[in-house]
Length: 297
Image (tube, rainbow, N blue to C red; front, top):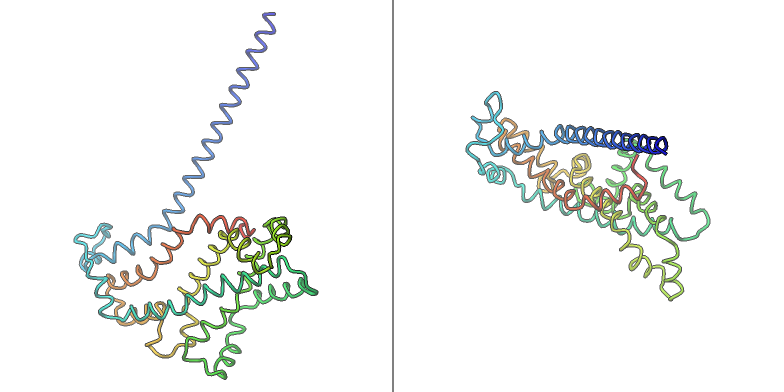
């Protein structure tokens, strides 16, 4: 009896030791992961902090070495001077004129096409989808000159049309991303709606789109970032300075005020902040959308 008791105690001690080792390994692994993530975040976050800090400094403090991270005094006038030296408000309006149609095309048109590829039955649908995906393999440089010639013949060069109308037709990448998400929605929901007499359009607007909020948020962020930061498109098609977007306006600002680091960093901060704020407000939907659409590695 005593031998059995000692064996039971030994097994209990061994199990307790194994659990302690497993818990210790989990703690070490979790700590190492968080340290790695913190280090990576710090590396990416330092340039942003330096940019914001420099935008609030006087030139004499910017020139100091080693650099001082805390502005003393805080010069908010740099942000005011940016608008005084360049029509940034006009550049902002021009950028928004391009951004909103891009988002509309990405969310609405791409969603309609993606739903058709995911749910509707049609001969040659898979072949057409493969052709659509193949367009993503063409480098933009290959189609740049033919596209420019086409828009020049249409009389669109020098207007916002080349930057607004094509995105309204949707994007192959966004169609692919949304199609992957729509395939995860149970068909039973749509079958029940069809039995109740709902049309495909009603199902799309009342059932599919509300369930696709994470994917739509992801598409919105991608479309916003792509059109907001686009430099090459406006550079090619917009010749009038009155039509310049923020990216082109910032480049012009660098040419005339590149040595005034406070002003330059203030203009760069105003250019970057909307993208950062959009990501922070929508990051939960963004991460969920990336995960559910199968884009993650």
